[in-house]
Image (tube, rainbow, N blue to C red; front, side, top):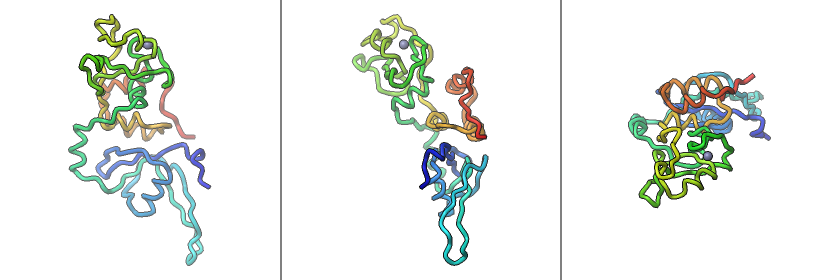
Length: 210
Ligand SMILES: [Zn+2]
C-alpha cells in the first residue's frame, strides 16, 4: 500500500546529543515513533502516516514524521568510538567522496565508468584503504596500470582521505533536504574537501521540498 516512490525523502536519525547516526525510511521512522523511541524532533514535517482505526475509540491512528529524529539508544562509549571511526570502503561511497571525478584526468563520469584505483598499487605494497584509493576512469586506470603516479607521470588532483563519520552520513544521503543538510554541515569542518567539492558545483546538491 505504502509505495516507497511516494516517499522519496528519508529522515536523518540522530542520538539525543545531536550526533547524526543514519538515514531511515518512513517505515523505520514510523516504527521508532510507535514504540516511543523518538525523544525529540528537528527540521520540517515530512510525512503523515495513517494507520488502522482503533476499535475502542473509533479514531484512526496517525504518525507525523519529521526530517530529523532524535532517538534513545546510543551511549557515550559509542561517541568515543566515533572519533576514530573509519567508514567501510566501497566503490559507491568512494565515487561520491570524489564527486564522480576521475582524480587523474578531472572529468566527471557515471559510476559505471569509474574504477577504484590504488594510488600505490597493491602489487607494490599499497593497501586497500581510503587513503590509498581514488576514483579513476577506466582509461586513466588502464594507462596507470601497475605504476605509481610518479612513475606513470600522472598527477593526482586531490589527496585521498578517509571520510569522518558525519561526512560518511552525508555521502550516504540521497535527496537530502535543506534542513538536514544544514544540520549535517554543522558537524563537518568547512575545510572538508567534500564540502568544497559540493560548493564548487553550479547546481546545488540540496533539494528543497516544496
Ligand atoms: Zn581519467
